[in-house]
Length: 404
Image 1 (cartoon, rainbow, N blue to C red):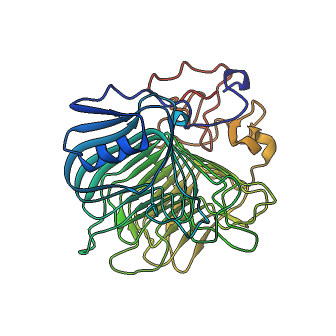
Image 2 (image 1 turned 90 degrees about the horizontal axis):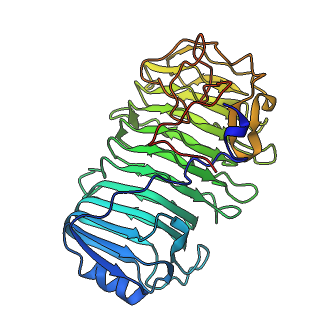
């Protein structure tokens, strides 16, 4: 794609396509007490619509009980207009506000959209057992003491299933409080999709290593991570983390069309990990690690079998460890920053001169669009990596992100 067809920075989360107008009951609030009262009185098929402003929470917003199809939404399409603020990610005197939004009990379908949640000692959003089909849309999450979005299983080990995180910005202003952090951390969840989101500065203070920005593990399965951008994170995507044996730490799923950039001053670990995760596919990702770690992709442990790693464009190696097996094809591990439009800004679209990646690989049936949502191939063959280059930018699909 032409640089002139985009802005200077790739930011897939902004602006997000507008959501439909809320259906069912709508409760409009314009102050923190009104917001707390609306959550306390919540019933099924209700949207709490939050007027622009800064809402310094006096207690966590607890959605705890039996609910179907509920929502907390900012009233505009701009996530910066509504801010739910906590007492600070380093403030151990958090009182009644350890989290931003907490769900549990029997919540079947909750949407959290069009707002910013920042500065909480634990999690801005925590989804506990009994929560299913959560949708986190067009949110900005800033400065979490631990995980930004944490999904836990119930007492029987049943996770929060069918979650969607899209058009989110998840970031630290500088670094985390300590090593124990992730962007999205799902335990025992099935069928999650994390897409079109920006993860920035998911990294720990000097001498520590943060967790993966996206971590799907401990019995999770069929996860999808696609179309995301990662800037200066220490570990980006992990499907599985530990060698659990049976059941596996993760099963299936696909990691595709992600942009990953790490500056040379940001020490880190592997960008994409497939650990005790059989039948997982890693397709058409682009990663520039700038020498911060020898391997851009690793697949580990004997439980990782029948994995497919194809058509990825990396500046570091792809390595098998601890008895893992996978099929590899169409990858390039010798990319340089000069192939891309603006790596430091996370813009890993190919330059016209990136001949080593353009028209160089076979099309994969389940990866027929690129980071922008444009069809591939455009030329004689598919391009390696997440971007499908075109000398003239195609007209974008109506539901794809437009970069400013």
